[in-house]
Image (cartoon, rainbow, N blue to C red; front, side):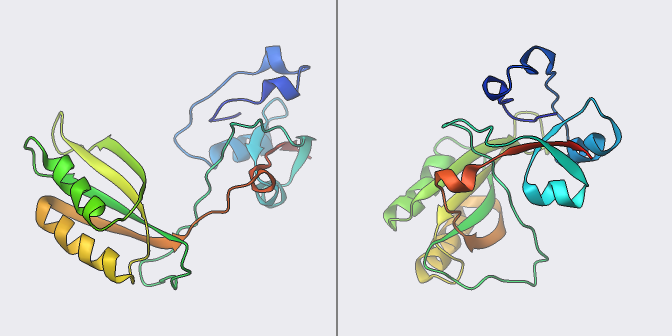
Length: 182
């Protein structure tokens, strides 16, 4: 079971037998792999230990594969600035031409780099969207506090998801393994 692109070129013996599933929960593949011999999951070594899974193949990534892991905490737990941080936001924009342009301009005017911008249906009304934005900087940084005040004035709603250290991105941190039940 793999929610991304299955690494079939590294496992020619199973290439013709893989069936790709899109699952709502990221933990379901690991749980299924615990119960059913014919199911495997692309997972971290920690997940294999937690769910008592065996390794089928190692180093199955290709140059383009990237898996994103996130750690969630309660809102009262704050991370201290490291100097290499990201902040994640959800924006609900006022429905008018140029609304997104104006919000993005607030970041540009302050020299704040955006690392992600993604539109998602807001579920408030058909055709209504929210935007998930990641920017470089920490909530405790003056320029981030300043841009958030400006952005809040330009949105229907601003939800601050939090700040966290940026991920290290190199070949050794992108190793993926495939596990199955022991």
